[in-house]
Image (cartoon, rainbow, N blue to C red; front, top):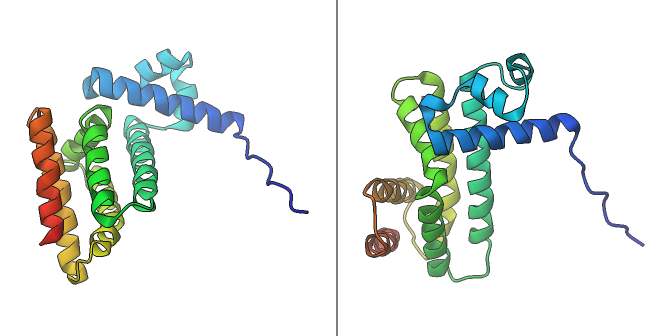
Length: 192
């Protein structure tokens, strides 16, 4: 008889790292990049700066970890939506609405900081390319599943256009009607 696998328990270090990331994310999205300071994060977790630097050597290391954690969460959520038993049209609608909902709130603030830093720092430019490329790759099968017979380059272009539309819609201080229009535009792009 098969037994269920033992649940994986996190080590003390993994739990501490997760706590640091949660506090750092909260500081970043609620108080902004200017307040995203190592000493402030250390104070909020009740640690010394040296203890914090054991986990993250620099502010950029910590920020990159926050961005990656945000992205991993988003990718997990998108994978669940893409694997749902919904029709392809409903999958893309659900993914678009979910991204708008997440990015219109705290999640978008994490990506905006990364995007702005990508304009000036090679490290964050590479992270930006990596994250958006992974997002496009995750979106392309959903577009193909909709019966779209476009080549890979065309699907990539549509995935990029969809991402651009969502990113741009969020900067517009949207209302519900505007967000509904953005979702409809995404679906039209997927159909072309």
